Length: 90
Image 1 (tube, one colour):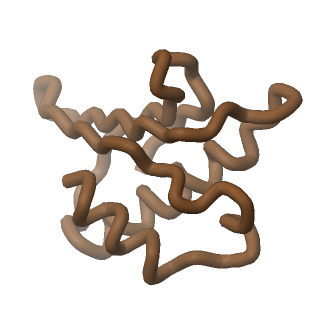
Image 2 (tube, helix red, strand yellow):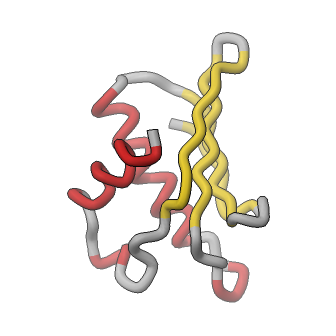
């Protein structure tokens, strides 16, 4: 999953990704009952408590899942140490 998402993200870079690309270290998706749950681990640490970079990763992830799999689920973007950067759904 990680490489597939990174390849998609690379093709959809915008100005919003300046200074933080490449940022995805891992993507894990698991089925929890009827729901898909994803964790995207990123290599950056949000500056000044801002979650804008994490929200950008979540936005691209949601676009990828809709385009590639047309599914729905919940998402957590976190740092390598497990700190929450952003959460959402797709």
